[in-house]
Length: 544
Image 1 (tube, rainbow, N blue to C red):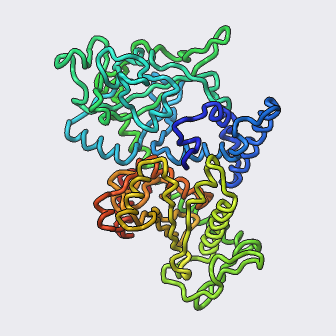
Image 2 (cartoon, one colour):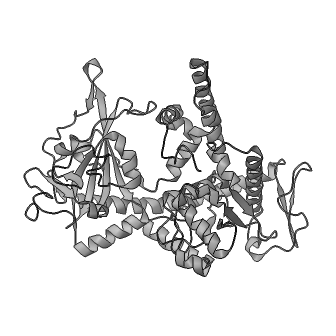
Image 3 (cartoon, rainbow, N blue to C red):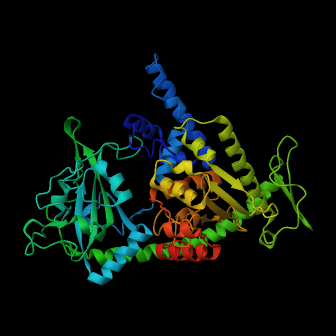
């Protein structure tokens, strides 16, 4: 994805604004039957936007927009697939009373590595405090993706550093609100008049310096200011996000809705608010409630999955346009129209044991997915896509192989090193190729489908080269760490094309790097260690 709009350092904000304005209301997108129909809907709306822009600028084409036909879909896919932090809306019974008229979210799961570090620090330093943090509405997308960072004395600093460099918090709500500058809302949502954002954060004890220890880094009891110095920024975790709705006043002016109560006297003393609410107990109760809810949903999901499998099997048997897999005593065969190339040889050998337990409908679904992804890759390579056509560009660097034609349930996927050319891992791959005496080295993945596919996700792991610890969203055992690849995060509507794009995004967003020692040893990950590591991470992160 070199040069892609989503990852290039020189972003075109005009195009991005047009893209976000084109994306329809959530209700419209929810009506799409699957990912393919969603892409068609977004592409149609984007084409109308391009036609309007051409009409306005009739003398010239609008930038290079016409080359970006799937841009809204790509942007939406990138935002959702690379986000590892989940916001859980609070219902009326769970809300904090001083924000009743506004939108409240709890951050119940951060990234696994961040949660593991924070839990360790919490045990070592025996406790934490809660404090408010305000920042401009424009900053929160970056904050939610990257966490709070110390930007004091950099060109990104926006509010000064009176008490020295660090991340600033306050025990006084009103003080933090002064820094929550309003931003304009999305034109398809109820916040279109504007909104502000405020966070309630948990801070590890001893991560800030008291006024007695140093006057420049203080927890000032007079002003309620808490400063976490740069070296301790990892000791901060966002626990609540409050979206403050703005209302329109006279002459078109907007301000924060204060119709319920004043914020002037709201404060927090370590973990207890001025309304006598213990935020630690409140937050832990939310986590427990969420865990119970997840358990109920898993049971309901299992029932729905069984019903869907029955329905899906009936639909596949009625469909005479796709591949038909006929189970035979000595194997299976893929039979297709004479005008199409078969996915597998019709002279099938005895199938491996892994596929014997698979239902006909599951084998049909896997064969169709294989046929579709191979077709998409071939078409992408033939079209020689422009560098900015992100979806097609990615596919030109992907190769899907069946290592054993009698086992359609196990794929090998190679990711060409040029996909990572703008990122540090590219240099690692070049160095790896030199050590191995090869022209180039690709990232080799293995995709293993389960007998209940497409109603359960495939298992995807890195085979080689080995990654450095905690980089690229690759576990210590080589499995890909994404909720998308768990039962709770999977949707039968997902295509393998979209999954592989999200895996590539995860490797890049996670700062993937290769393990230099493992490269020298040419060691690979085993399937066993990959599954064990995946199960550990899923359990620690609350995924099912």
